[in-house]
Length: 384
Image (tube, rainbow, N blue to C red):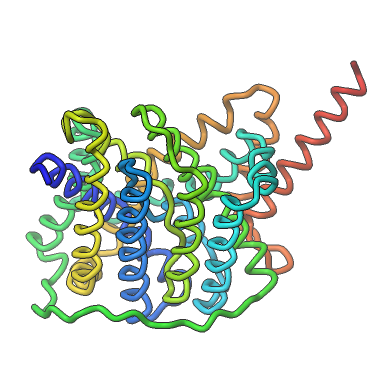
């Protein structure tokens, strides 16, 4: 195990954890998770990422690193009126659908038929409210948030992958240094997995489970596979979907949402600086897995530290972490001229947060966009 493999895995795991852990905590809070359930969520998803990265890297001899679904966490954080037990039912549905997509080709083709613009509009609608909330956080706590914005912008010029991590480090230093937060008591309890019996509510399954599956596929798995191809590897698509879907289903029983292929953090682990021999880079997946086990075991101490921060710091961190995904989603949404209006409608309905018949806004945004796009296509064919 070369030092370069270990250092790349360490940076990738820290970036993946530090840049979006605030969003996972927001999702847990929105679902009314208890502290024990939140700790179980983080531990279960960390272990799932570790197991999946190690299994797929060894099995395929390709450097596979997994991530938790960032847009999926954003979707959950925007959810209201859903309990943890109902959310677990949605997690099981999403994980099962991901595994079925790898096993059943027709299901994969059906997902691929959703126009890119509408899928991008749905994701942008999920992410936009969180990015807008960052401005309110800066207004409420300028001494904490404005320096975070500045360091984010400066570090992003040099290394975009580390920009959110730098903002988190500065936010911690300012909050504790200026007395806006008090250090929690020193304790190192071992985390525990908490089994949560699922409740299968039809409205939650359709309004949360199905969109969670779609955004994970469109915004995490597909870019993750593309990142591997760009680095010269043939991604193990069906194996990866089967493993991540199965692990997501298992981890879901302990309160965790879906795991998926990584894209940004994967890029850190794929270059020649990681290992000069391309065929040997798969070992980075093992080192990455080891660091995620450590992060999972250390989650109680990390979560207690983050819980002590002012809410404005966490809100700003979420906003900064989602600016990149929002940019990609909006670029995709409005790239094809013939899909732009339908994508805009999808974004507007999804971003409204409206829930109809107990079904969340992401589903209705998707339905509205697909309906308008089909109408426009039919009208255009009639006029030809």
